[in-house]
Amino acid sequence: MGCRLRRLFSKLLLLGALILGVVLGLELLHPSAAAAAIRRLEEAPGQIVYQSRQTLKDQHGNSWQTIAFKRIYSNGQTKVELRLVGFPGVAAIERSQSLTLTNSLGKTLTAADTSSTAFTERDRPEPNVGQYDLQPLLPELPAEIPLKLILPTTEGEGIRLSIPPSLVQEWQTVASQ
Image 1 (cartoon, rainbow, N blue to C red):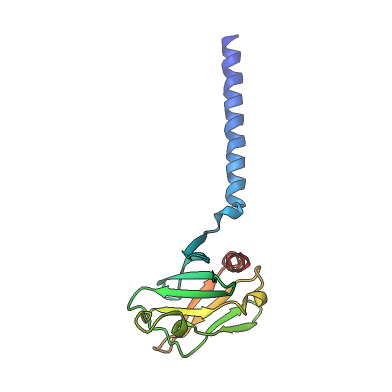
Image 2: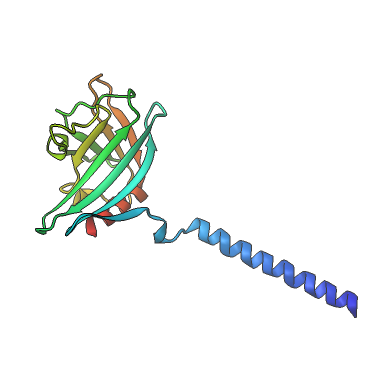
């Protein structure tokens, strides 16, 4: 009787572990929407910023932080922009040129540089920081298709970043807040 009970207990324990493993495996395959790293900040009374931050590698293996953000001003106006930040000394961004985004179907869009209006004269951005107007492009970016982003540099060769569909979806979520 005791041996039978132990075997039954062992089988139940094994079954429980198997069920737990399947549930955890399914969760890893389909992470919840809460996995998106969208932050809400109140910069000033009535001025809210929603932002998404992700780190991507360029064609040389250098890390770049992509920060998509929507700023809602107290008067109701909004801006949706993309800031790209590399490590100092990696590249100097050519701010007189637009950012280029190309999807895998060959459609190319450009985003205007907003660095000159985004920063004050005293707080000019470092050469490794660029900021671009993302708002007019979002309706034209299918969330299911990866993008190639080309960041112009003063050295000539643009910085290429691969943007996965999940990041495009996150940018669109930020814009819809």
